[in-house]
Image 1 (cartoon, rainbow, N blue to C red):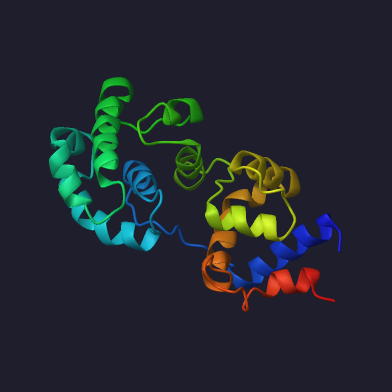
Image 2 (cartoon, rainbow, N blue to C red; image 1 turned 180 degrees about the vertical axis):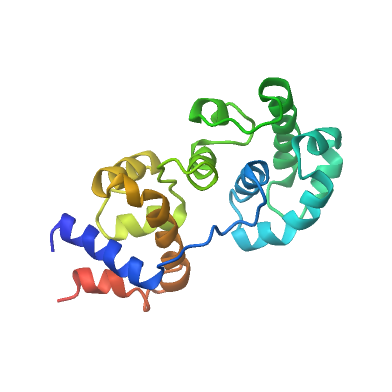
Length: 206
């Protein structure tokens, strides 16, 4: 099977499995989306979704978040890994949104990535899921599966993102990256043995 055929197989099978893909992180607007994605680094979306309802009740806007002490934010997110660093980032992120962007989440990678706690992946998710711009955020599931499917060398997320964008058409990026994440969680978890990973089997088993 050629690389092109493998890519077509992935897209076809994932469209059958996940014709609709909800955004995994609960949010109400682009600010709460950005906060949720920033919190999800090195933890699960499930854990983030357990913590954010209380956080957003108290600090669901940049104005409210900026008014809290770092210690108060940390208390609200203490169940999430790296809570100390993330609490500092969230407060400063909110302050900068107010100082530089009138409290509105900006719509460029450059401005987003200048905010504390917002790396390229978080910016890509906001651009894709928040603003609808074509993007291909690469998480651990996508990195692992694209390497497994021999669609990238797996050397870095930067390379994997570039390869994904070269392989698939722009109009499917926003949906496909979520479909791969859902597939990874359900059929090919990192700690599993991959017995359910039928796409890889279809590609490589004779």
